[in-house]
Image (cartoon, rainbow, N blue to C red; front, side, top):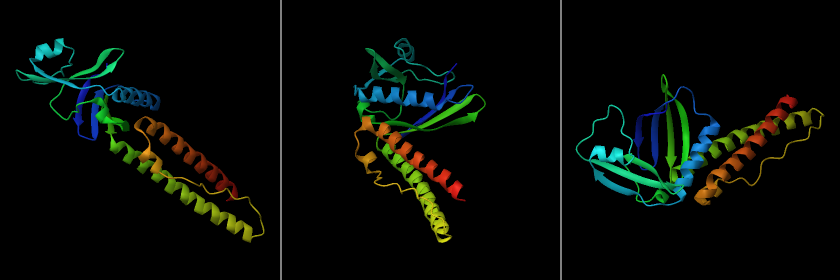
Length: 212
């Protein structure tokens, strides 16, 4: 039931619209990211050929319903999975010479654009590191605000003769590790750092609620 309904391909980002009756789950998104990155990291050369539309379709390229094609089309074959070409597409836009040039792939959003039509947006390469660094920075700023509220509450209670035990501030956090990590480690590292921040944030929220 899934068919392409539209797309945008730029050097560092993409948009993909497709038919689907329900949202793509977080688990499904993680599987998609893992699969795409596995193909990217195999670093296989991209093959580009021009041929007649009917020859392209026989070669495995998928033609979009309602799309008009000329006498010659540009066909890109890329990626390798289980000894077979992973993707054969009719494409006139941005491309790379080798899948390894993509470096990294990360889905940044998924949502509805019309009834029965979903949209995935993603970034690639250095834009992935920039996106993840921004996400971690946002989490860290939220955590620091909670820490400031916590220190204030503990101070007020201590001044009133009570002796609450403060939660130590989160130490040693830096987004530099995301920037410097090899491509294959970036998403795992991000998940680890994000989880640490979420755990600390929850501890502070729970403790601040008790102190109030």
